[in-house]
Length: 172
Image 1 (cartoon, rainbow, N blue to C red):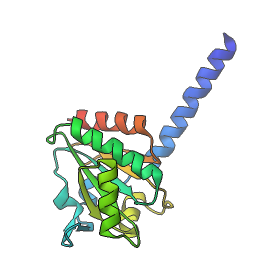
Image 2 (image 1 turned 120 degrees about the horizontal axis):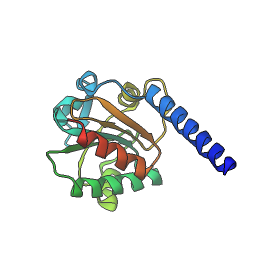
Image 3 (image 1 turned 45 degrees about the vertical axis):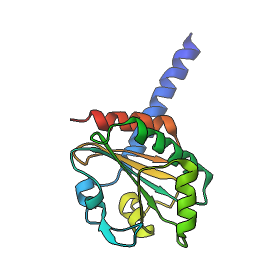
């Protein structure tokens, strides 16, 4: 019993340390990121703010067509989009492939069923969210209804995404 308590206490301390470290890497408020330029798939220019609605929780996912984990995450986000009312959640996928082709992007979206808004960004868009941290895909950010950063999830971690989205939708 003593060993178990020690283990549980150690696990709690480890979880708290992980949470504190993750909190250090949250992006700025979404209101700060709204002017960031992006390109719509039809080629026109836009900004993050023009594609996300304040008052809704938001997921911003950075992805590439060449990573299997990006496919898994996009598939999950597609299911999440289908299950969640549009008034509660915006999902924005930002493709940051350096040499993207429309054929590859269309293939990726159809393969994964990721039927939510996809736009094009670049490494500077990613760095506005992640700061100086190295690029690791997939990477997504969850924001509450008022643009407050809720979570950063690097690598595909379905349960962390689910918990963060539920928390963001519940933030009123």
